[in-house]
Image (cartoon, rainbow, N blue to C red; front, side):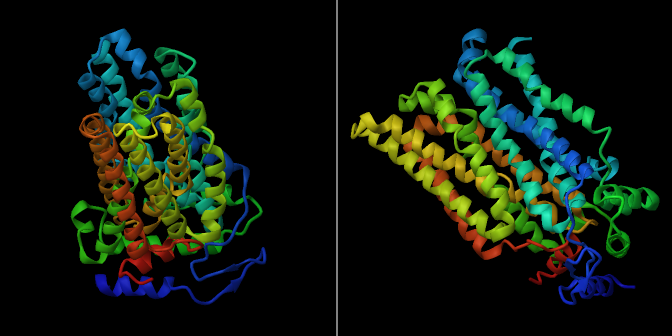
Length: 460
């Protein structure tokens, strides 16, 4: 069968349409991805994946409370600390380049020099996590739970940034580094007890292992034959179209997904998170806010925002929640820039600390609501399995490159204009809202195979 004929057959097979009644009384479309409940194995898998995300976020948040202690103990200049703060993103880019292919191969499951080397390696691990974690979760979770589970897990990244702030305000930077290793150990231990992604097992032809993993995830008394058959049929057909190579990704039929994926990565990073996260201590100092008080106060919205986002993502959908989140980020950055502008003009200076704290709360709550997790969720959903590894590597690399740009240039931008820096971030979030409204597809309540087949020809 020719490539186009195979693609058309996939599109026909995966179109939303006839509704079947299945054993648990829940309707399902033709993909057979049944609405399913939560099992112990699924919860354990989500917990282990969350540990990886938590570790990555802790790495991001580490540099802010540790800044003054490291500079004092090691005598680093601003430029040297900027290298330390941003070198994690270099490691992240290295991890990003190989993340997709590595996931396809093995599964989806002295002084300043030593300091930089350690942070570089942490960034490498985090670069792998950013792609593998949401991809693994999206592939093991029923469609009715996919958004909520993945949202909570990826929201562990900004949440652990906050935890790092809180702990870092009461312990020194060396103790903070050791504490950050705890979730990594839990992750390492937990990996021995969770199943491999059924869809990955189907891709590499391990049929018995695929069926066993799917059964473990759905529960021993659940009939998984329909879901298993649809996953195998789709995987076999899509693999006949092309192998997973970078050059195959740059075909017209994948252009839409690639634009969406790269655009979401740019939106997530250019909104300014790493400016806040890596150099929060410096922002507090500029605004005249005591660091300990500042770190405690900005931690307040994290858990409520994460919980709200996990609920609303299935109620209102990915796209709507992402636009609301990016709008909140834009507002937070505009007000932060306005605070520093008033300070530079010596207007209302007595209110600057309170105003800066308030708008940082707005920014962090908005980020946790959607921008922190939803781009990764959509990335894990929209690419078919035959280009998923290559696509994941490219999108992940773009994310980390943008992260490096923001983290490395932040100090220099602030020296140029503290107000202008945040106005620049605000403009990027505003453009992100427009991008989401015009181009980002809604993937709520749709099976992965249905999403990927329809988007291959930009059918929505």
